[in-house]
Image 1 (cartoon, helix red, strand yellow):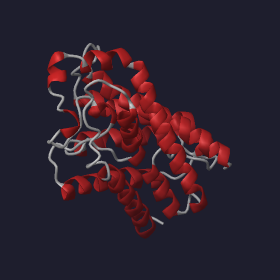
Image 2 (tube, rainbow, N blue to C red):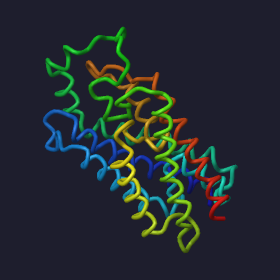
Image 3 (tube, one colour):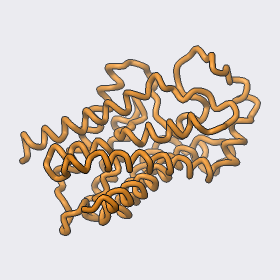
Length: 258
């Protein structure tokens, strides 16, 4: 697989993943959205369909990793050369930032309406905000725990990511050897829905470092009124947890299934 294939496939695929995934978060969060308050089921299925769409688009080009944890797991399994890992990860981060920016463009008016609402504006404590946590639209871009406990939050991300990556590793490659088959992409999307329903409650289930870090960077850069904190004190957990989970899944696969 060429470097250009990896770059193009992972950048576009991850951009689509975050566009549709963060897009459903915007749809259920922002004022005057037709899907406002649609609830957790909408979010979990929205992310599942985002994975399916992104994988379908990119699997024949780059293998549709779309997630550094998946790339690490595949490298440990032996399906991805370690020399390709930095390019995969960099392309995924770039794609995630592009996807988050496109969500901002698509929902620009809704962000303005939401954040200029007097009730929301009154909650803005500025840069000296004492309570940890995301601002009023942070949940569109990145994850945050319901209960802040480092051990629990990290463990939840590790466990959820292990399930995801192990499910991907046990599927094998498509007939052309490049990535997931169409059935594999469908199975993976259903696994993501399952993880969201069963394990998403504590942390919002990043299970993908760039799905959280890329949009968080975009949130920090956007000039949105009363947007609040980007919650950088928590940001390491949805990065470290999935990376650990992906590595553990790769090791477990080699021990139990290889």
